[in-house]
Image (cartoon, rainbow, N blue to C red; front, side, top):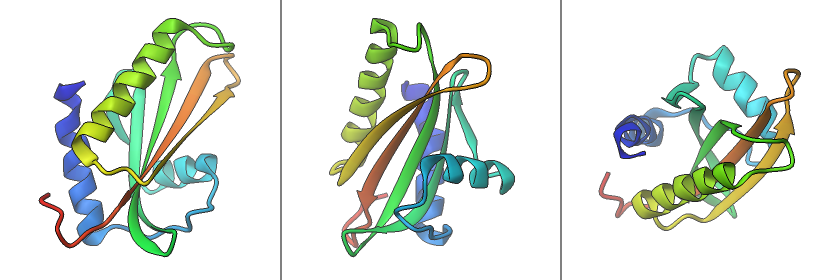
Amino acid sequence: MGNHFHKLKKIFIETRVKGKTIPFDMSMSDIIRMAEQEKNFYRYNETTFFCCYKTVFKEKPSILILFSIKLPGSPSGSSVASQYLISLIETIEKNFAPIADYYLEKEVDSKKSTIGLLRFIREIKDTDKF
């Protein structure tokens, strides 16, 4: 996943400086649709896309990173999908620590593919070294 991380970090930094602010309680599906319409939905790899927006989480300015992932295996889950999600979570935690919150939601699309929506919240701090 390291090869794809550079683009994520670049978009994160751009969002931190001049990104659009959205409500924290906006649904993940609505955020994805908005990102697609605004052309702010970026390819992370062949199965994963992401977007970044500013938000306010627990009264603190934050960055919301949202991944849309076409998960391998059956809709009920698979070990390959679990390993991929764990790897992605570890990458984000390692490079953007501390993470204030994360949440995973699964959907089945019209083609019967399982889509994972994985949201991370990272508080913006003056001491960030990005």
